[in-house]
Amino acid sequence: MKSKQRPDELEAKQQQLLQLESLQEQGFLQLYYYDESGFSLTSALPYAWQKKGKTIEVPAARGKRINVAGLLNKQGDFHYQTHTGPMGSKEIICLLDSFCQGLEQKTVVVVDNAPTHRSKAFMEKVKCWQEQDLYIFFLPPYSPELNKIEMLWKKIKYQWLDFKAYLSWNNLQQHLEHVLLNIGKKYIINFV
Image 1 (cartoon, rainbow, N blue to C red):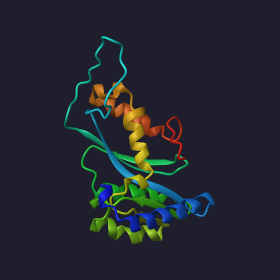
Image 2 (image 1 turned 60 degrees about the vertical axis):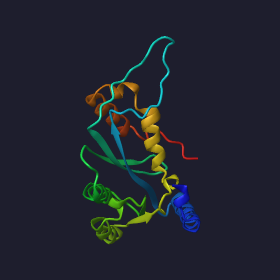
Image 3 (image 1 turned 45 degrees about the horizontal axis):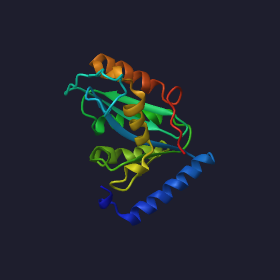
Image 4 (image 1 turned 90 degrees about the vertical axis):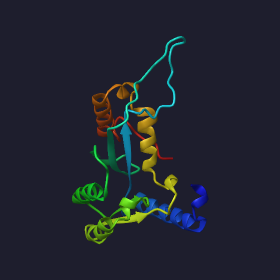
């Protein structure tokens, strides 16, 4: 997708993000990164260590999925919502409305250009959120590397979800909920 990026827009947005990060470090605002990810019994693990001569097998099952919408800042403050159905504009708006209730200062939320983030319902809420000191910062198209929360989804799928999480639907729910509840405490990302 890098071939679809517009270098001038990417450069401008990178500079704006650096300014926002600087303003957060100086205490003028809060900066959160928002995105959604899905988790199912189809493991994201490409391989696992095992004893020589032993085979580890995990039954793969298609179907149900736990979708997670989350907001994460560089200090590890994480707000999330899970949903087993499709994650549409309605669910995202609900999470952001709830998030607004606890704001203590001007807050910027970085989002990508997914259709649900550009929907009519979402765009109608932007002005309402601004009145509550929540501002939406849209990333340029095809630039997931600028959204810091992408690191979180990668850590959960490839490091923090125990191998046993994929043995059953109940295991997946329990292990994922444990990880989500402990982000910023037990599960920490070092944003360097």
